[in-house]
Image (cartoon, rainbow, N blue to C red; front, side, top):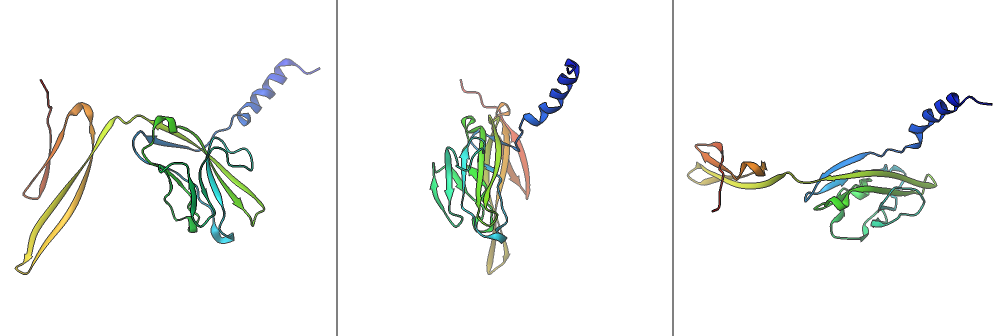
Length: 187
């Protein structure tokens, strides 16, 4: 008869193997997020799908994207895209304007004909609330190079603003940018 301590110790050693962990990607509400998935195309182009939930069978469950390896022929919503070069094996899934409801497991499943099988990758997406506002300011700066030409350049300044700080203003003066925080109180 086995001692209870030995049995318990053996079960504790097996416990970590029973708990599956998946690569995790973090997103922010309202912003796009990309779930990475690539494969080598040296053995040929592969049909694939993205589905919601963990990969566990040869069938793609709760499908969000289907491709034959050359082009996408099904997108559940216009929020789901393969923005990489699929002919080069980049089948990473981009989700536009993510919400907290998008959190969960996603399955990238490839039909690898050359290897006579299905390759699967489960990724965990964790979407967090947006705690910052994002403003884009377009600035055009022009100056004359000579009498015959005028040179202009456009710069985009991206700022993450803390909502509690109030609006931020960028003032350009003699080629230098100055940030000003102003509180606005509506009465």
